[in-house]
Image (tube, rainbow, N blue to C red; front, side):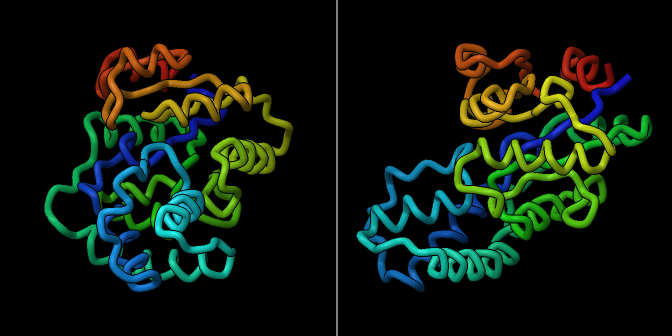
Length: 231
């Protein structure tokens, strides 16, 4: 049997957005702060959360952070992303569609555990037709950037929503988190969840294994990944 719940990251795990997210956030920051002049070079998006990305970016640009400013920047970000996500280079990552379809066929409970704001996750997944596998509100199982800047808070929120959906307290050990960065691994392990790490993002399998992932595969089309997801 599949896991009681499987929680998927988005960028680098389900899809490759070809830089659409970075371009969109940079466009919204230019509108708010003026020319970037290369100051965002140190900014790492991998495994971060959208609100933390805005906080870090504003710090690099010498601008103060507040919630209203962050909301405004992310609002414009979504408008830019709706355009940028359609540019060439986007792709659904290997094995993803087949894995999600197999989980659906078994009535498995799947959800999202991502640093994206809800609207950003929806846009990125809809581009590849993957949004149909997930719920973004109501009784859906998800953790988004609105749940906290720290990725640990996002995992905790997803577990709480999974418990509500199941009608019982979900033990963290019953939730498999699937991600592609050390931050995904660390946040899941902090919550007590097992982790399937996929080397389809910016990190190699050896790096993901070294940071504590329970299982590591090159992609979700690997036989070991399919066996683990489907139990």
